Image (cartoon, rainbow, N blue to C red; front, side, top):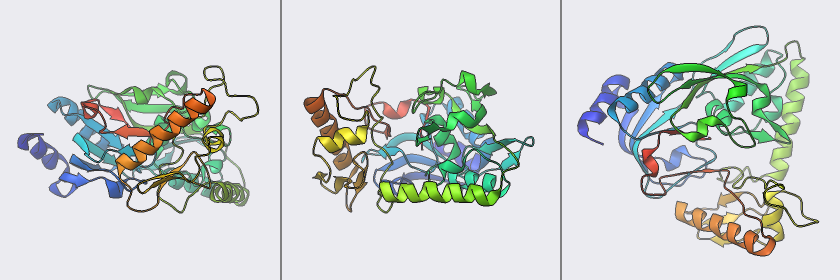
Length: 325
């Protein structure tokens, strides 16, 4: 990235919010990874759209991150511009429709909706990351996915143009949306919720959801959430007697507790890899590959990552993508 390109971002957003060689590890829930060649901090959907448009005008590789979950940044870091979307607005569009900017934390949106008696998102209490990342990766929990509540998504395209895209055109599937293809970035999301609910009842549902996560997931250690997607039995049939679950397959392969460097397969939930202290991104990547290889060798099932990898391949920073975080 040239000095002139860096100066354009600094002029647009203020020198205090644009940094060279900025460490990314503190901005991810894994707490690993190298620096961003250029990190731009934006607030709200308007600034996010401006940063995305400027990167396109300059021809600078760009990627957007939010809360830093569901993400593994390489030890070498990320070339080009990393746009970090944090905060923004949440507002009612009607009695039942709520629009939230991409940088709003999903937990913050859940609390906002509960406080106003709006039902539909309370089971996502405890989900890390941002609204944009959750919708980009179609966050799911306990058999429900967030697209069930999405009415439309405001996207910025490769040229910076903005469009409101109905949920039916977002290509939602298990762990997927069209925003993962690159070139488009989520600016804000309109959710359809049910008004008139008792906030106390919604808080109890949220409390139960969070308590279940605390019992079944290693929330006290740095991780990126579930590493692998659950296999599709139609594509990767699972042997009889084993649930079609990535965690179950890793567990049955005897890999709970397996460590490489500072990375370890969680003994609480085998689809989580945790940083037990001093892990590198390479440790985690090697452990991911080991789990995939062992499951394939034992059960003939190919596990595919749910987490997103940034900066790992030559040119991986050249795509303009929105991460699921």
